[in-house]
Amino acid sequence: MKNQLTESLVWKSLQSHFQELKNTSLRTLFAEDNKRGEQFSIHDLGIFFDYSKHRITTETIRLLTQLAKERGLARGIQAMFSGEKINITENRAVLHTALRAPKGSVVMADGRNVVPDVHEVLEKMSDFANHIRSGRWKGFTGKPIRNIVNIGIGGSDLGPVMAYEALKFYAQHNLIFRFVSNVDGNDFAEAVRDLDPEETLFVVSSKTFTTLETMTNARTARTWLLGKLISESAVARHFVAVSTNEKEVSSFGIDTRNMFGFWDWVGGRYSMDSAIGLSTMIAIGPENFYAMLDGFHQMDEHFRTAPFERNIPVIMGLLGIWYIDFFNARTQAVLPYDNYLKRFPAYLQQLTMESNGKHVTLDGMKTDYQTGAVYWGEPGTNGQHSFYQLIHQGTSIIPCDFIGFRTSLNLLPLHQDYLMANMIAQGEALAFGKSAEEVKKEGVPDHLAPHKVFEGNRPSSAFFMEKLTPEFLGRLIAMYEHAVYTQGVIWDINPFDQMGVELGKVLAMKIIPELQDKSKPLHHDSSTNSLIEYYRG
Ligand code: F6P
Image 1: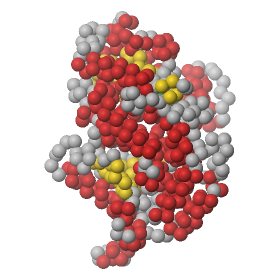
Image 2: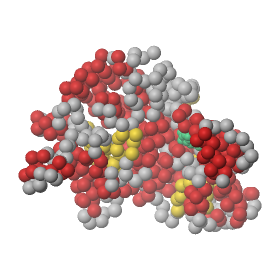
Image 3: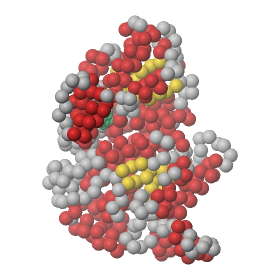
Image 4: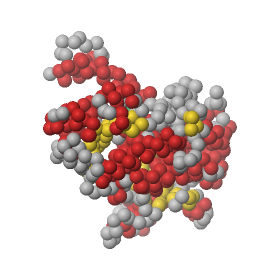
């Protein structure tokens, strides 16, 4: 059993350090040290990570890295990479890092080197992706596939959609990609409204192949397909499955030769670089997909080997803890200044919140400290014209991650300069604000001055890279994955289960027959009963 986090000496030191630092402004910290920008930045793997606009000093980093050491982060990293069953509540290894391990390397899970298995699936995916992309794979009536519809939810949807949007520039443009996730029939209806079943391939993506939403959508898809193609044998040409559950895939009626497998040591929210990325690979081609995997792997190696003080995911994770547990920040904004990353915040919501939204330690004790923050965001500059007001002048502290690229994929005159100037300016405005004196000097009348003051002292990180390539996307995602794990180890929680999603699902299964049969007596609370009665009409 680990010592209680909040009882540790280093935690107490962090508390007193926080008391000393909490009233110090970023203006003062920058004025005191004109090398601060350089000092609190890491350049590695082509990422310029500037964390100088955080409310920290060298002492903060010293104490936080000390905390990481004392909480066994080095051991935790080693345990994850070596396939120990660190997902203790499900008795599973956590080996998403093996999904991007280069061919020929060795990663053991349960006494078996899993790298050859990973590459076998990758090769099968590549072969299939090439067949679809070249038009060699024909639908039941002999037409090539033009539309690819991924059916999945959670990790079997958010990763694929995010990666497709992020890497759309690299996609084969004569193919149409759609993503159906919601059990709301409107999602399916709109996704296929303009598609021809003869040219449509469904990729049914589900780790378990039992998820209500996905199986309902998959059955509806089959009915839709057979509505035109009539013959059951059409299913084999228009459905493939991505899953760990061969039995369920075959009982659904998908030929297991058209199944792409993965393993129970890949968590749903850590699976976009497994076969769950099949739609991504079809879109961008195997070569780009492998480049993305390489980017992931480079960040894995950085996380595994860089000293904590120079380790990007470790510093990110520690900064999160600093704000959540000491400044009482409850949310974290993720603000990509690249429109291709518009689904990145939604992707990160599952990654971070399903992982670290936990209230008990590995031993089942209730934590006496806050854990995972709410992640949210929109691409810049859209957010600036919406919620940034609250980040600048609201009453809560909201650390921000700005993500930007030097070079745009579409070189339209002026746009990139305007975009990047805005990203850089937002971090500056948040950190340094505008004081009452500065406002007065501008000749603002007294009664308006308080409204125009920006307190500043609002923290942000900047992640600057060259260009949004598959490789950089891989690095970026792995960076957040490992920041999440860093926090999980320090908080002594399990970032790899998701038991909090179960209760609502179970109750819904009980309510479904009650909605369908009006004569069923209701035994819920009075509020739930009346909602069911309202639906029954
Ligand atoms: O409901 C949560 C969850 O289990 C996620 O963790 C997972 O990504 C999602 O459902 C989908 O699960 P599956 O891939 O098994 O359909």
